[in-house]
Length: 148
Image (cartoon, rainbow, N blue to C red; front, side, top):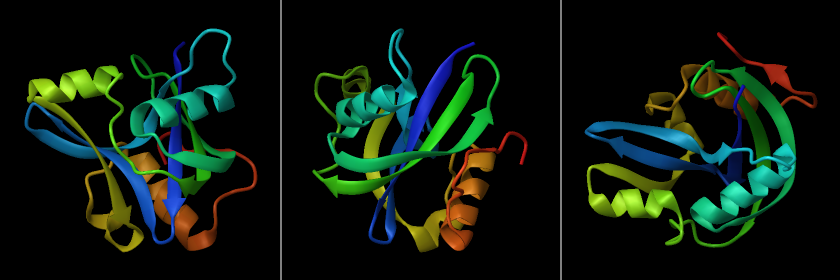
C-alpha cells in the first residue's frame, strides 16, 4: 500500500496549506507527498516540504495517521516548527508545471488558526485532528484518526 507524509507547519498563529483549485473544486491540503523507495518518512517529509514550498522546518513529530485507502494509502501527519523561508511553489516540481496550465492550481497559503473551522480542508478527519491539536495540544504518540 502507498504511504505519504503530510506536514502541519506552524508559524505563530498560522498553518501552511496548499490551496488547490482542481478543475473548479477548491480546498486546502497539508503540504506533503509520497514516500520514495529507500526513504524514511522523516526524509520524505523534509524532501516534500523543500520541493513543494521551500521553507525550513524543525522538530518534525509524527502525531496522526490516517488510513485513507486506495489510491491515497496511509497518511503520516507530522507537526513541525517553522524555521524560515517564503512559502512558494518550487519551479522544478510537477505541481508548478501543472499550476501553470491554469485548470489544476496549487498555491501555498498561510491560514490563521482561527479561520480553520470554516475552511474546506482535506480530509475532514485531518481537519478535526488539527483543530483538536491546536486546542488541546498535539499528541506525544501518533493517533490513528481514520474515520474520526
